[in-house]
Image (cartoon, rainbow, N blue to C red):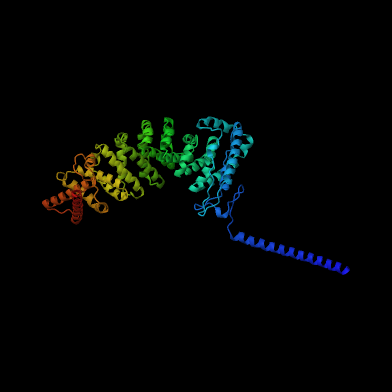
Length: 565
């Protein structure tokens, strides 16, 4: 027994020593692991994660080809729930949060596992089952102001911190919503209702901007635009944001409204805008803002209206014309041209292009073109733009100006004598042709202006010095003319189109063919005068004249063969 007891004690001692040795080994191993982890942390860049929410799994980081965990997206949406309701609305806010949490929990439970292509499919939620703040609509703007003025004092002290956190969460969603997969997931999880509630109660310009930015990105996905339209009161709330004074918010509002007017439900958006006060506000913003980006967005909204000649145009263009749309666009063009003349500012080029496109759209309107096409100030402005020597930076603007000149001259020919012998204007037209290489309609318009100018030249009666000026301009642009004739085959207009463009000319010839025939006749008359008078003009190269003359003859011959067939 004694020996067994000793043996037992020895075994216990060995066991104790073994356990101590194991503990030592574990401690040493832990120390080594800590050292290795420290080294790895030093070698690998540290991923900074906000303390208020955990990072998504590494395989579900934000990427266009993947998606994020739906519960993570829902957690971000939940953090955007409005917290600054007035004291009279706290019960509604609490009920809204409770309903949202229940709906979000159901969606997470219904998420289907990741499919083979890496896209998450969420179960269909029921956004319509949720009433946002008692179905408040746009008529509660005064109540909103009252609610924001009676916030609890203890909340005001931490409002900046709360707003900063809200902004961070909102910006993450703003970026994520650029992906249609993420956008659809957000819509299923009531992002529109949450943003709607924030627009109703928030007085922070930054929060409003983020809400509008997210909605603007959602609207860019064609399939999701109808969800914006079907959210009760949301579109009217968006229209009401036009009366804000924050530049960034106004840019986002104009972007959303423009997208809506180009969508399938454009008539619905137009009906929301048809109030005179709203249209007057749009014109006021465009006329009074000094921010180039806002001018571009606001005129872009007007362009969306002007380009639609059906229901939208019928609803909105007449009241806009009554409110002074024509004078506004001309004043904006005058201001931008004065800026362009004094200094080339690249950030203003898109503004100039948008204004010209809007004027061009109005000049092409069957019912409202006469007023703007009769403006002598507008004609002088676009002619001045065509005369610019360096067109590369504003090439698209010059193309739009060329089309606009064509529309004006087709409406009234009273301005033709002012430019019939303006050689710098004629040269500017030829210089613009290469920039319209991908726009057949624009090339036709520019050639129609050239044809109108040359049609007034009586080459057999004008004095030699004046004819010489025409010849010099044509020879200086002979490369442009030849390239244009080579690039595009003759385009034949119908007899009706030709008579509408040039009533004094008959036949089926296009404007370009008419212009080329006139150029050929002027070159031929120059050669005849030169032979009769037997004099040498060193400024006019005879070989250049022959080359351009032969090119015109080949083109005319080709046109006749096509017409004959």
